[in-house]
Figure 1: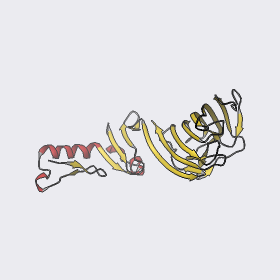
Figure 2 (figure 1 turned 90 degrees about the vertical axis):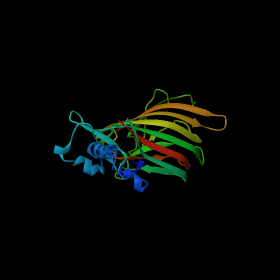
Figure 3 (figure 1 turned 120 degrees about the vertical axis):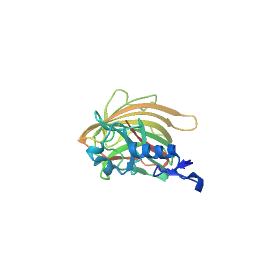
Figure 4 (figure 1 turned 60 degrees about the vertical axis):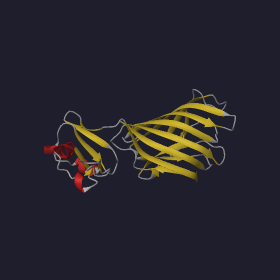
Length: 240
């Protein structure tokens, strides 16, 4: 009997000479897997012969790590509701660049920010990127904030060259950022919920919304601050 499966190919692994696949159930399982699950890069999935498509076929993309299931009514759809697309850790850097994370596969994204410390007080922010170039128009990001900080701009709209994740200078920041439609040529909207650490005793909770007006499709973003260096981690998820 098969003892395990190869984590890359999915084929059965038989650990000794007595475990070769002569058992009828092993052979049936291998045939079932070959018929219902295919593996390969995204380019192979999108060019899969139409005549071989069948209800419920699963494709595991080996380059993007995303799994899809095919149905005639909807075509290829991600099998997971939340897919980790990228994660970076950084120690003492001024920026973090995430390229090729936005695409037509997802309309919505979640970015989780764990900036555990900064070299000095500052305002963490994001800029959209396309082809490695940041979108940094002087007032293209229109932000509204609601926060308990005395420096809040409550109920007012400000124009900036970046999407702020907090309205006050902080020494650390923990945030969730929901991003809508970055991969299509339309406005992009950010909804931010953040907790900023001002000192050992000070803290700020902030709710912000940001609208990026230019109708451009973007494939990534940059994390940056108003000056200090970042130590922490950022993860990007596609939401199905």
